[in-house]
Amino acid sequence: MSKHSPTWWKNSNFLVGGSIVCLLLLLMLTSFFWTPYSPTAPSAAAKLQAPSFIHLLGTDHLGRDVFSRIMVASQTAFLVGISSVGAGCLLGVSLGLTCGYYGGWFDLVTVRLLDAFKAIPSLLLALMMIAVFGSGMKVTVMAIALLAIPLYARMARSSAIQLKNLEYMQWTKLIGISRRRILFVHLLPNIRSPLLITASLGFASSVLTEAGLSYLGLGVQPPDPSWGKMLSEAQDYLFNAPWLALSAGLAITLLVLGFNLLGDGLRDISDYRRKD
Amino acid sequence: MGEAADPALEALLRKELGLDLPLLQRYLNWMVNLFHGDLGQSIRFNLPVNQLISQRLPNTLALAVWSFFLTIVIALPLGLWLARHSRDSAGFAVNAFSQLGIAIPSFWLAILLMLVFGVKLNWLPINGYLPWSVSPFGFMRSMLLPGLAISCSSVAIVVRYLRASLLDQMLQDYVRTARNKGLSENVILYRHVLRNALIPVLTILGVLLVNILSGSIIIESTFSIPGLGQLLQTAIRSRDLPLVQGITLYISIVVTLGFFLVDVLCAWADPRIRDREIDYE
Image (cartoon, rainbow over the protein chains, first blue to last red):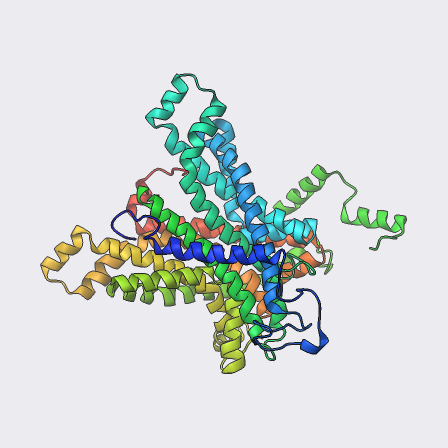
């Protein structure tokens, strides 16, 4: 973006993204021990109320406070994001590093498999897993986490290939450092900036996938809270209570936007883009 | 079948669906039938999977092509305009716009569009599908909101790439030569720069295809469009695995064909790609 390598306090993408993520993270952590109202208790007297000082974002068709529900549902979004990043970092990165560093037939087979994953949209793969194992929180989180693996593996593999031909990497082999140590002590720290970028963007896309699945009614099932599910419920009250459709969608957009901006900011800072 | 199903009946159903065979045998049967063009029988509808899919596939493809068309029609002029008016403030606006465009979930945008143009202004229908073959105008009218919702993120991606690529090309030597020759800015932009700038954009068409297809799977249910996405939802709800398998296969074939076409298109547009050896990563 800018001519000179920007540092983190000058990069607006990073700053804005980071603030949004921190804000939502704080909201999520708060929801564990405090919400303005009970997110599950229905109230016949307060059905479909417009936003006001009593109910900041109004109430839904059962009289539940929407703001409290948004707060609690952020736990689901973060759970999905964190588990996909976790699976990607643990399984994807180790697979990618091993393939990239060793090469050979194992690498060839893995690359073909990773390519095959590209041919099926990840939403469709997640839907397929749900068709086999049933919907619900557990399957949704696992499916999205598994689908993140190819992304990280591809990134780690191409980084490993770039790095292994560098002089100091050749030296590690010459002076007899064990292969496992080369991989995890010498290679791994060097891919931390592409890894951070991938994790940030991957987090955002997992949140989006979960919201889409739950919106279709095939992901997280009630009583588990989810922004996507809230949105599909709101759609039935579009004429009477249009504000219901605004809050949940805004929450998804903000979280995705936050992580995307953070990822792009990190990319600018680490200057990763200029290499290609 | 419930929990307390009659064991004899259960065994009969298992035999009928071929579930009594070993896993490998079942997979082999499926593959053999696949090469005969037979994807099996849907459990839910009791009809051949092929027949069900071929009824719905044209609608999904029509929606995808329409969304693709909208993407190009919106993104191309927008990218060109932004590249011509490139100041720092414009750069900021483009970044903000494209970040938002990518972050907004298509189904939320669909709901917002319905709210504004369907409910408040009452300009466009919020559901009901008219096939292209019945009335092209009706198709465009009823599919305008779904199309816009699906193509939003693709527009954001294309505008971003196109603007960056145009600005990059504007700094090249041949542009300076053209200016010195006395060509007008318009001729330089449309005859010389745009052609070169479009090549990097061509390479992301595959990504757009995946984007648009996944978008239409979700959006079909928002606007109740009778396409593959809706069929897939029904299939998943009723655990109709042969149908799920069939739909996934069809969509993967469409995506693979799309990727292939993009590769051919790139090679056609840029001879340098044709000569380069294919390298994986």
